[in-house]
Amino acid sequence: MKPVLLVALALASSLGCDPGPRPPARVDLTPTRGAVVARVGELRLTDLDVAAVAAERGIAPRAALDLLVREALLAEEARRSGLAGPVEIADDAWRARIQLLLARDVEARFSEATVPAAMVEASLQARHAELAHRGLRRVVHAVWMVAADAGAPQNEAALARMLVFREELLAATQGHPTAEQFRAAARRLAAGASVRVEDLEPFDQQGRTPDASTYVPAFAEAAWALSAAEPLSEPFVTSYGVHVALLLEEVPPMTRTDDEARAIVRADLIQRARAEGARSLVLGLRQRQRVQIREAALQQVERLSRRAP
Image (cartoon, rainbow, N blue to C red):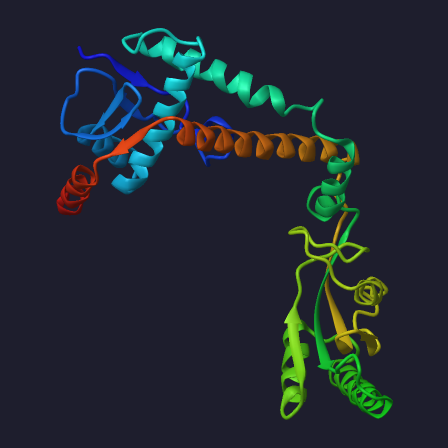
């Protein structure tokens, strides 16, 4: 059987960035099985290697070659730095050596001890509504758009019109409009006026959403003053204009503690830092090591892949 390197690092999946486990790419070392598509140091990547990885991963041949080149760069670096023996070494040993390389040059640089506490706290605050909120509000609102530098007459006219909108809606719905009734009334209001109607993401008392967006404080304060008993707001003013909001849902607080959320944030920061560190490592290796790609051979693999059923 020809010696084959099963490289452990399909780069992203080794660092936890891949959606699920996938079989490792296959890199033939020597002798060459088919037409050589690329050379990375002593390693030769063939058309059969590229086609196999493309089929296994469901990716284009060019992307498969890129993956193989990255893995070959790591294999060569492990050999050069004394973490691996000759290219004929067994598959399992190659996997272990490359993991040692990553542990030494990537993982050791990014750990709980190296992540600044201030970075963890900043990330926690940005993700608090996602990971450990103390309740959220979901609303639909209508805003009569008024420029920030608009004069008093324009502001007063918008405020008066939104007050009429609210009173008419209350009268038509006995004080408890549904979301659809609110939207329909707001659409009628919008005819001939600069009015926007939006269903907003849930947000906490500071206006933070689970995807780290933030609403202006005046809006969050007005929305959090609403309740199931009085779900429709009085008209209120923000830098965007004059609003009326309807409370749709009160999301109960999460049971996760801040310390538990902090641990999640810290682990995510470490994972992202390691992924970026691995990308930087491979980029540096590619700049230092000679990578030769035969474009004609790669194009032939691409043509054959397009003919495959």
